Image (tube, rainbow, N blue to C red; front, top):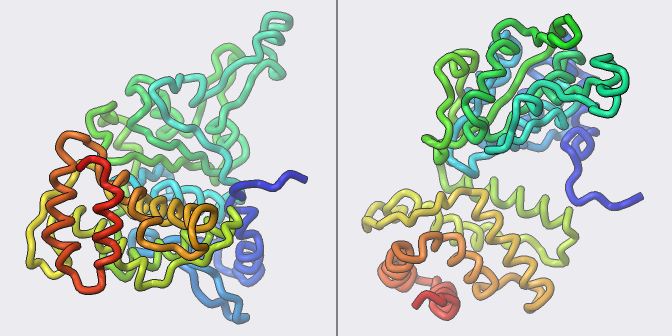
Length: 362
């Protein structure tokens, strides 16, 4: 059996989902695998009555997750909105796994997404031979979710052309999908709903029409509120990805992760942690997802080309690549931060020298 790079959450966390279901005696909405309360525990983590420990999948506001789960128990769809790297896809995927037991009913939004992708298509060989019979119809993820009473996911909703996205309006408002070629209408089973994600950096790419937006409850996922939360998010994800990739390097200690997270948070916020120095922010998003990518890249370098233990020079190239996205405007911002902040921090001498050596824009 081939080894899989990344397991679906309903497979990777099957034991947690089974334990939650076994002790879950609260009312469940139709076709939900768990009660809303148990879904919340799955997302935020916690200790069950039998002592079993459920790992947190999201570290952040409990209230935001409660609102998201409650929305999915109503007839309103859920829109997760935020800057890139704020775990929108991660949360949507785990909500689908916990509620439906299936996170695969996914439409990836792109400029090339068509109405057929969102609704249904046809097996044209069968269509030409036999006409629009049931065997010729190819159900898309949204139609399958309607037929099975499950959650469907639409990633990057604002990347989809507006007129194509509006084909969801009837589905979300009427919970029906007409198939005129077969003179029938598919009616959604109870339990059907939709989670969409969109990032605020895509504003202006394809605006969501007001008619479609009214069908969603919007939950904005922010960047982590505290440096402690961000360090913990990074630590957990780096450790998880490292195990999956079988990197023979230990996850860096929290003190090392904190230095990298501090750099990203300061450049993102436009000031140092203590508020003493005002900074210019580069063009990149500098999200927790990019911190995780930088550290994972550093772990791979340390494992295969370094000492086997992550060091400053393993992090430097990835860090500069994450910060400098605009080759014209970002290098001066980075160098100003390097000289005015990193160079003057006690215990950061190794980072300063590694960053200077790795900066090919100098």
